[in-house]
Amino acid sequence: MTNNMGKIDRGARLVVAAILIFLAFGTDALGSAVMVWLALIVSGLFVVTSLVGNCPLYGLLGIKTCRDC
Image 1 (cartoon, helix red, strand yellow):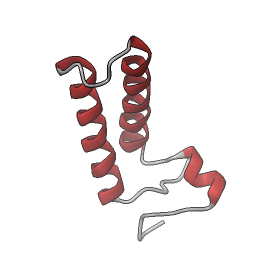
Image 2: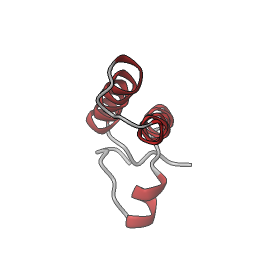
Image 3: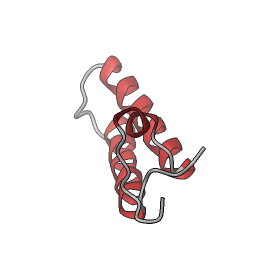
Image 4: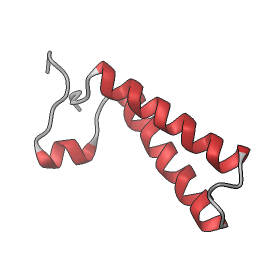
């Protein structure tokens, strides 16, 4: 599996994941339990893809945000 995500993209995903986790556990902004679970699932996907450096959706669309790949 080759990397298709750059450092900025990976960092941005981690920041968005942290914000979603904060919204899910730290506030009542999301409202229903369904939205909390959805935020946790999306943040989990963002964390995993940023740590691995490969986004399956980018692969399907042919997008590469890294310079060296």
